[in-house]
Image (tube, rainbow, N blue to C red; front, top):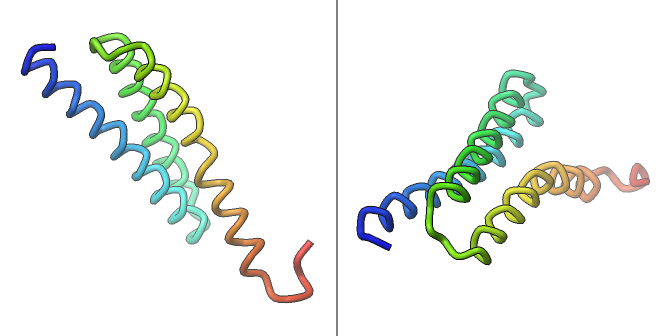
Length: 99
């Protein structure tokens, strides 16, 4: 891997992680404020993470195992904010209202 390819791959990996963080943050804000606009932005961040994933898969010389890890991470990230939100709602309900 050339230094230029190494740098571009590192930047793409940073974008991958930043998009995941933006998705989680925007998802949380959307749920707190009951905002469809923020939820659309959250899904947009997840979509951008998907674009970064495709570019990493097709345009970099990462080993197959790393590419598989990226795909698995991308798919798992989709569920983290909703599952975490449901858990927080369940654990912070007043006593007697838990189902």
